[in-house]
Image 1: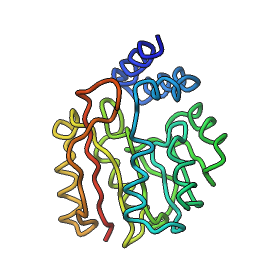
Image 2 (image 1 turned 45 degrees about the vertical axis):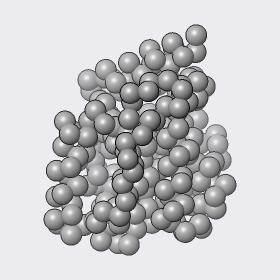
Image 3 (image 1 turned 90 degrees about the vertical axis):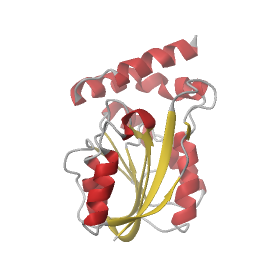
Amino acid sequence: MIVDKAHAALESVYGAGTPETLEGAYAAWAATYDGETAALGYLLPFLITAWVARHVPAGEGPLLDAGCGTGLSGPSLKALGYIDIAGLDLSEDMLKIAGSRNAYNQLKQAMLGGPLPWPDGHFRAFLSTGVFTISHAPASGLNELVRITRKGGHAIFTVRDRVFESGGFQAVFDELQAAGKWRSVEQSPWFRCYAIAEPDALVKTFVFEVL
C-alpha cells in the first residue's frame, strides 16, 4: 500500500544519522515523494502559504523556500502572486522535480546548518516546512537564514514537537532576540502535519520579524 511505503520512507529519513545518509534517503524517495506524502495528508507545504500571505504582501520578494524538497509550496505561492522565489535543498534529485514546477527562479543545493550561498539581507522572507524535524536541520541553521533575510523581513517556519526541546530551538530563538536580530510576531498552537495519518505528529509554525 502507498501509505505503508510512505511510512517506510519516513522511517528512513528520520533514522538518517548523517547529512550524506539523509541525502541518500531523499534521493531514493524523490520519485514517489509527492504521491506518498499526499496519501498521508501532508499539509505543511500548502498550509505555510497562509502565513506567508498574512505577513508578506503579494508581489514582494524575493522569497526563499528553505528545504523546498520537490517544490510543493512553489505553485501555491506563485498562484498567490509571489513570482520571485528561490529554493534550496540538500537533495539534487528533489531539486530536479522542484525545477519542473516552473515556480522557482533559482534552485540551489545546500544544507541548512552550513553556510548559505546568498549575501546578507538578500531575501524579503524565508519559509521552511518539515525541515526542522527529526534527524534534519539543526536549530543553529536559523542563524544563516536570518543573515540572508533583510531587516523588516520575515522568518516563517515550522518545528516538529519532538525536536523543539531536545534540539535547543528555544535557546536559539532567545539568542537571536537578545542579539537584536529578530522579534517574535506570531506562533501557532501545536497542530497535526498530516491530515490523514500520523495523528501524533505535531508541529508549530513560528513567525519572526528580522531586525
